[in-house]
Picture 1 (cartoon, rainbow, N blue to C red):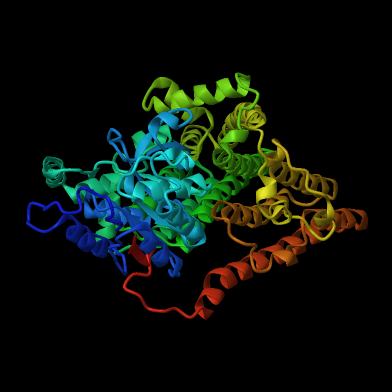
Picture 2: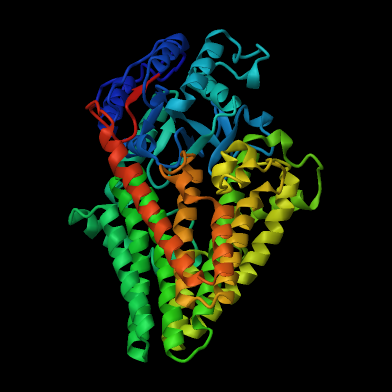
Length: 607
């Protein structure tokens, strides 16, 4: 903790200990392996410069539940995460502006473009990659470059020092996620009355009950909010008492979805109704695994990756069950509907992921956004912000529902198949999916042109375009619409494979199976995009979209399309499984691990 200039550093708590001593104990109980109290920013810079893991910088005036500190230390939303409060800004405190859960500006409230959305809570976890920026910010504060009247970045008033360091960190373009306090209590205090009021508020909260409620996402889709999250926390608590892990619950959810798909393939009213019920229960478990991770603070990169991949695999297996069942019931185009559904949903997900990456990049470079001023993109952005802020209103729920999120998709499938049949369920998914794709695609394209930033030039474009040796030579053309390139390439490859399969007389189920394997490969890339991870271990062997398409074209000429689809699909599946084993089990096992007091997220809390 950086205690320099903090008027609360010498305050005494209700138990008689100093506020600093209590915070030191709280950070240790929250999971920090090492806690130090720094006298000035220079000492902070020295400590951060010698750290080999995440560093937690804390002010000495923070009064909070220990759970709040633990949540910040273990937060999985980003490498660097800052505590953000809704308290009125006080002298010396830094205001922040957030977009999509990220701090995009920090400084005096009156100087933030678009207005402040919160106040820095006096604690920030800084990831290893961002430590040089933290050191630079601390040195700038020590040199007076960020002090009052210095004319430095933000021209901040002198406060506890932590505020100035954080503003300097954010001012360098560091990607910092915002961690909001809900239900629990966190305040920064300046005097004894403020400390007493904060301690009273903390004592009034049932911490375990609040933790259970906090395990539910703050903003979710309509169906999940009112038909799942109203009772899933009870399942979460039982799961915790039984000692189940989030990964274990994920696998249970997969089992329910597989059983539902099998019943949909079997057909008959009892099987369809039973499958719909299992599908709903499987979705409940799909929500419970995340709630259990948040409730127990049991996060892991493997669990996050598995959850992402399992969600898509479950949904597409259900499409396969519906396609099989519809075909068995006499619908000639049953498998065709399933093929259309998996193609549409995958392309939609690709645009969702890349638009999110574009939006995050625009938030990091606000000066390049909306330079046209007052255009339709500006108005759309303002309207979207207003609707999102009006939580619970009709317009809010319409906006969240029209995009056809996973909760609505699973609810629609369950209702349609239980009341009608597999064909109606697939048609319903396709109809709503096309409308949602048209709606989001049009609005996002307009907003992307208004943002005027590119995104492909910020990542390994060859990896995320899924280029092979030929396409990798194509020049990168960065622009405001380059976020559409990966999804467009997925659409081209999938549609080409479908066309080759149809022309070559391949069974429809084989075409679906080949596409299913491709989606696993491409969703792995998306998961790596979201975490900015490197390529899968065996990515080079996947050939690339152009070579795979060329192989299928040659197979069509040779009249062996079915053989080619089966062989190439099996080859890609083996590569995918081998990459998963190498990336998540073999390589980590080779890393020499040094035991510490905490190996979860925060290796050191200092400042």
